[in-house]
Length: 223
Length: 120
Image 1 (cartoon, chains in turn brown, cyan):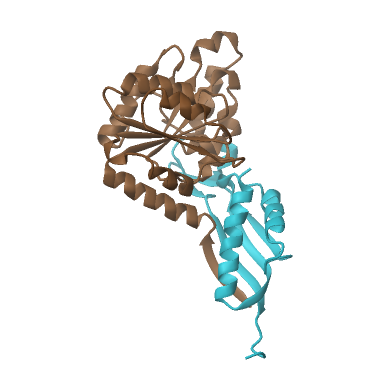
Image 2 (image 1 turned 90 degrees about the horizontal axis):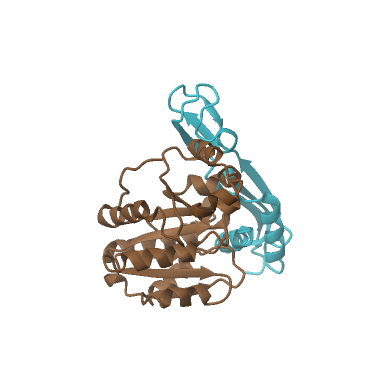
């Protein structure tokens, strides 16, 4: 006997992501899902961003890591609400993990919620969490070939941060190749060249975030 | 790396469907995997094989159809492989492509033996 299905394998995740999205909409919280390799600087980016914006916007964070609460503790030191999720080996966050974490956050008070995904440039892009925007972070020390090697992740992003730009002179990162590859993978993707550590170039990122909060859509910007 | 999580979801749906349709054993499962989903078919097959032990899907043949990621140029209407060219049309170089196929990840059908009614 054959049973015809045509059922999405990710259905359970997508149903939960829709529930999350509905909750975020009700509470008026805009949500940004940060995706990068391990060590690209996601937590440092969050620290600098929170320090600068926390007097203008109320910000919360969900931290995803395989192990440890170290990132969660770094964010908690900035006195913003944070929930640490440990996936214990899982290579990505899913919508259900995020849903459980929401119960511990004062969502009605939050303008912006950052979800720092598990460090991994492949799997997180397949799992909708209910976020408004996915943002991919690449650091110059990882090499300019990453958009070409992980095209689906960059294709799914609404913005890209090119981090550790202060280290550019000490690497063989090829900016021209990077922008050329990105142009075919995601034409018009906003790119912010930043150093989360020194604060270089961060103003454009802050403007983008502020516009996301205010309108749900990014401001027009250069690519 | 997320194939194990996908295999869990797949097994869950297969078991639910089999029970709802009174199948005592699942013999074959056909799934369609789009290239945009970054799934390694071999890893998905292996994960499913391990997880389905001691279930009614144990030993089932998993048929995986790989669906190519295709983009259609909005300028010259050419359809071409997205993973190779991205949004730049290989014919007219326009960057106005639209992905028309390759994001699917679904179970097409499953086949199995029905529970006989002899006992009733």
